[in-house]
Length: 381
Length: 80
Image (cartoon, rainbow over all chains, first blue to last red; front, side):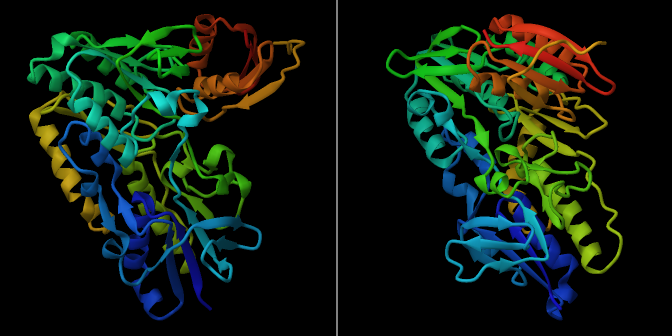
């Protein structure tokens, strides 16, 4: 009998997990007692943190793409297909190109986040983003020719990928305009849905004084209700209207419909035990990364660490041993505070973040990690 | 505390959600309901006791009542 482990999604979590399973279960895969399949609807793996640098002309979207089959161990069956249905009772998946259903013994959902700008009228037409390849390229065209006016960054939806990235963008923009002698002609405003500048109170407490020092205006309790692209205004549920000349919006996110359709959770996020990462509504189903509703940030580091936990648990399960590995909420982020300085935070379920003093060394550490990320994807780092 | 005599139109169960989860879940639901609708937010996060009243006032919505239960609180918010 062969245990079939299916990993759905070839982002950071899915790719790291597939390689982890190939490493831990190599003998079982070789003797045919375990089979690992990675399903993704794109032949490429995409490293999204590169997009932050695209609008500033520092990176290209292509820098964040590599073919999945070059990153994933040959012992993993990589299938490029779009899954259309998950049946957790029958333990089978349907996919667009697959003639027969795909049976599984263990399923890991790593389907990630999708953007839904259409949930806010006018946002798609009026705002730019750097949360997609196309968005980052279009924003680059606007930003590189922007020499005066009001730049507004509005965090419209939470949870969103990389919670630090909106802070990073305004810190980088401030520094970038200063270096070019344009800052006096550019006003920058940052809006956030709740009463502080970041969801995590410790990070908010750290970031707020930096924003004040750097003359970055802040509008809190700002939940964008609509954007008028012709009048170039953004209006909040709370009744505040801002004029803009260039609007950068962090769009609402959701997971994939498959999750809700399978009864695993709302809005595409799987309800899980936040330590074991097992789905609450189905047996032998796990979720990792953005897909797992654990309350920790939607960040690559989270997906990476969770993949390691689920890899160990699955290896134990197929060997008939008790699964003991658990996720402790570990999250790690570099936070750019300008074009040549960054901070760093590390936290978990029990320990709050304490941002490190910004330094050039941490900035270069972030860039160095971005280059070496491909070793993470391969399961080596 | 005695349960208030309020029949919510929608309920948001944000128990277990990390900060600022409960408030963001409430805001998301308020976005989708009509004016006059009452949303009940279940939260076990202490921060909600300051976050929710502050936001309700800022947004012009009415916090009708806060009910304390054994392991969580229920915030009844009426959309303006």
